[in-house]
Length: 249
Ligand SMILES: [Zn+2]
Image 1 (spheres, rainbow, N blue to C red):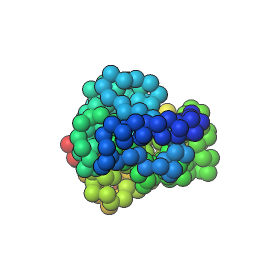
Image 2 (image 1 turned 90 degrees about the vertical axis):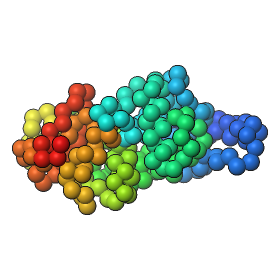
Image 3 (image 1 turned 30 degrees about the vertical axis):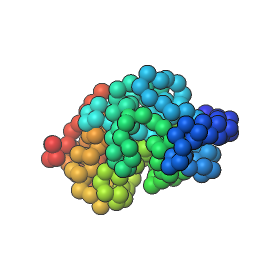
Image 4 (image 1 turned 120 degrees about the vertical axis):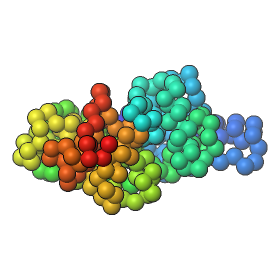
């Protein structure tokens, strides 16, 4: 991903940023965590409403799981009200100062959650690869696009996991190659073949998963009561809303 290529340049920016903030606000400032986050992405400036650009986009990916119910955050690089509200919910969710502005404390929390490969702490790419051993290849879009889509879902799931009391969510099916999707009886052109669909089971009831997904940025939810969905809850990032879990809501 492009974010990795920019990480080194961003490190020097970070130093200047932390220094200038330190001079301005004195002791007690929580500075962004170093090193571990830098191999993925480091923000060099505070971001707030009205800002735009690739650093906003990177932020949006990380807070997309803190959307309003039924109103996903667009990953569009524009820091509008939805992004500010998501940042507020993220801050509240992790016990930070709540102001809807992404600064050192917010970045520090993201760095604490973020692994060197940009995945959130509790999810790994290996959980999402196609069940036939084809990795992220053989789908209805490029492996690179699949990886991007999977990463976006992972951050939404990280938020869901935290809201559900930090207990594990299990991915029973992530990306599927077209061949694997056919083999397991998936619908043609399934979201799984793009990496935008994910099936969950877990310690929680399937309805608890479906309910939590509504305010975690998932526009696609198919769960208990829907045909073929009584043993998992299917979540998807999609353009229009499709929620079908009649036994739950
Ligand atoms: Zn599914």
